[in-house]
Image 1 (cartoon, rainbow, N blue to C red):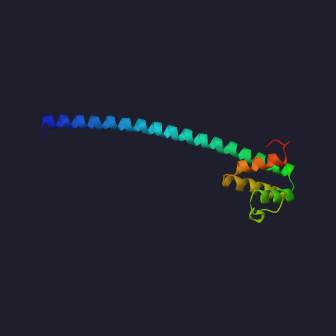
Image 2 (image 1 turned 90 degrees about the horizontal axis):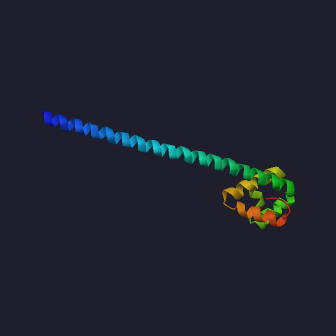
Image 3 (image 1 turned 30 degrees about the horizontal axis):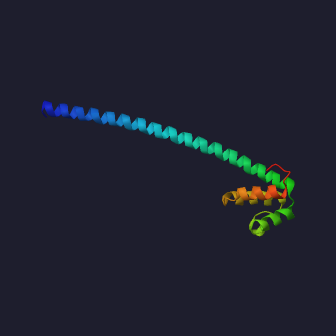
Length: 120
C-alpha cells in the first residue's frame, strides 16, 4: 500500500466515523422524541381512562337499568350485545362500547339531554 492510498484510507475512515457520530446524534433525537410521544400517550390514556370512569359513575348514579336499556335503544345499540347483568356492568360496558366505536360524545350528549342538571 502506498502512502497516498494509506492517507486516502485514513480520510475515508475519519469520514465514516463522522457519519456514524451524526447518525448516533440523529438516533438519539429520534429516541428522545419517541420517549416523549410515549409519555404523552400514557398521560392521555390515563386522563381518558379517568374520563371513562367518571362517565360510568355518572351513568350508575343518574340512570337505572331500565333507563340504560332505553338509552341503548335510543342510541341504536342492541342492549343484549352489551355484556353484563347489573347496572354497574351495563354502564361500564356501554361506556367501553361507545368509546371503542368513537361515539362517546353521542353518549354524553344523550345523557346531558336526559339529565340536564347532572355534570357530564
